[in-house]
Image 1 (tube, rainbow, N blue to C red):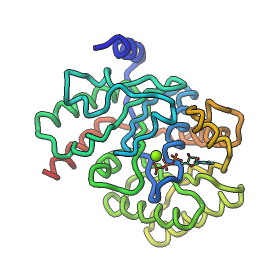
Image 2 (image 1 turned 90 degrees about the vertical axis):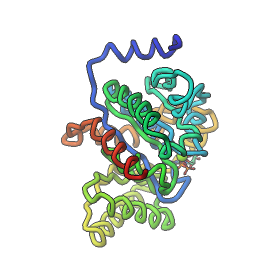
Image 3 (image 1 turned 180 degrees about the vertical axis):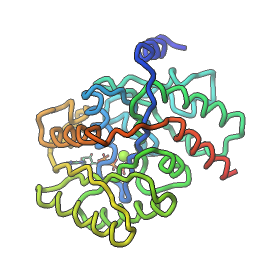
Length: 286
Ligand SMILES: Nc1ncnc2c1ncn2[C@@H]1O[C@H](COP(=O)(O)OP(=O)(O)OP(=O)(O)O)[C@@H](O)[C@H]1O
Ligand SMILES: [Mg+2]
């Protein structure tokens, strides 16, 4: 184990045992702001005193590291090669969050043999008791590799913009998830709203359609305004809540994060549930 990994493990060891809640961040259409929402939401939770990790599972298009100005040394699949442990592949990100890079080899994970899968899950198990929240930044839409993670996650955040194309694709995504598990908690986030009216209207109409056609009450976490600070922060490779915590977009996401962990939202979870669902789905695939 290298020094950084040893330090990180020790740092996390000082805390009491956690039972991580796994949150998958998805969208129908690409480019709606998932990675920015995932990263800045995670940092906001960290600033609220939670231990948070983010995992980049956008195969082939992984870019969370770019948004943080980090160059990962290892990827999730390195757990299977070399003699690396999960602690070796976790990087320290900004504002106290931890980061795990997915890496492109990850796409072949469902085809791993029993022994390698066992090793993979064993390592994944170790981090569950060290974090309060583990965020999974997914690619747009659903692939056979990513859907296992989404369906195993405790909560799913669905990100859309107010544009009809994004909304239609977000709705298809929700339907896709709902048809596989009608009890999966789904949370809607409307990103890039041009006004409060646009944000609220998008939420209302989305909820209405989901209730009418799926009989599913989708909880809305809220909306995030369009803000030129986002592009500036992306160019500076600094998460926008760190780049300018007083920007309207930063205030909005901090508010969403507080709401999420607010009264009644923090139901007890079992990280083990996430792992057993993953194991089951992967073995069904074989
Ligand atoms: N609230 C916002 N205000 C202004 N611009 C935004 C906002 N959110 C996102 N953007 C812009 O959208 C771009 C894409 O964001 P991001 O990479 O987070 O989307 P994504 O959904 O993760 O994309 P992909 O589907 O490719 O993974 C950002 O680089 C930024 O320029
Ligand atoms: Mg992304």
